[in-house]
Image 1 (cartoon, rainbow over the protein chains, first blue to last red):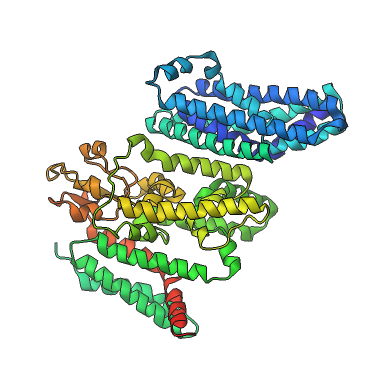
Image 2 (cartoon, one colour):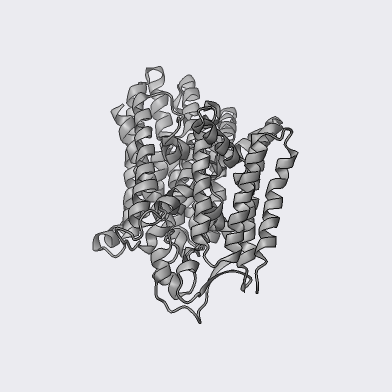
Length: 204
Length: 351
């Protein structure tokens, strides 16, 4: 319980950064896909958060097992690859939304995978660029126990998740059609930016 | 209605020159401020008296931009290194908010000064709205100047409506990414003014070169080449976060550019001549410019039927609007244009 609380407090205190890591992906997506119903938008956010939680759990487990044998270089490569994939996802999302008249895009937009993009983005961001996650990881290396690691990261997840709720305010903007176009353009820019950063990180 | 041009321009002069009398020493700076206030008052007289707006406005606007660059370029390296202007405030808005939160919780009250300045920009935005970008901004004069070099554009482009919102998307991206990185990403990677001064990244030499390449590319392509060949203010139209910010929040400002339905003959001259891509066929069909209109007055000058006007609550307010613009232009430019004149004269005379 104490470990969960420790993770929760870490999540609360560092969520500003955490939100910063999630926002570049979540905000353009929400702008482009915003619905007039708060529940529909909450579903997007929850999917994203669930993806992130899953990433935390998997990584917490893997890293706890690795413990002190954790190889920083391999981890850095995984981060870079995750960033590149998330960038491609954003670009694909923006492309499909921007050219809905194309047969290929129309087909993809109904694909199950495409509909679940928030989940995949959440998963990739969860293992990706989040500085508080790195802080949690250091603590995790000290713990070096799978169950303890899971409990700790569950608390951390809850602490950071609270800060994403203000993004629901996008519901009031959903009626503005231009915002959807702006969201798609922002997704293009975000995808391009993270693709470049990811490739550079991989090369380095 | 007859415009009392002389009285109004004298009033502009008195207001602008007044602070100079509070200088401790009546030296060259006092004289320079006096001269600059006189110059603005003279332009005010011409603007109040004549019918053309944009050309006269742009002369002042261009002088301000080059004077700012000159003053900034020869300022101390410490001043040059600080990423601090209205564009930086917008592009790092979340960082500023976060800093204010830190200042509040730590009790370091002086840090609040930054937000106070942001508040000042907001007040000016509410008074001028988008007109900031055509009358006061100390960067806008560069591409405004270059887009006036040729009489006709070498290429004519029809911008897809969807792409006109690019600056808003870019600004959202920059604001978020600056918050994520905890750095002024726009200043570090996209600001063309940095091509003339130092920039912040001091680590990796490859990154420094890449930054320098981007600064020079943006400066050459968006501030120099595209404005010349297209006769459009491409940097202000597409890459300026403040322009995007003001296009949204400037809507709170009561001044409007109105197209008279009865007089407009849909000749599309305004579409062709608007330097900001702020009137397109769809918006003209609705007799409304887009929210990117920065009230430069170019369309008013070229409209063959005088169908376009500056209005406030439906009434034409050309004189009041120009008066407001000139006062803020004068008050801000008086902070650096006189100093730039003194420096320039000093350099030319070998001082």
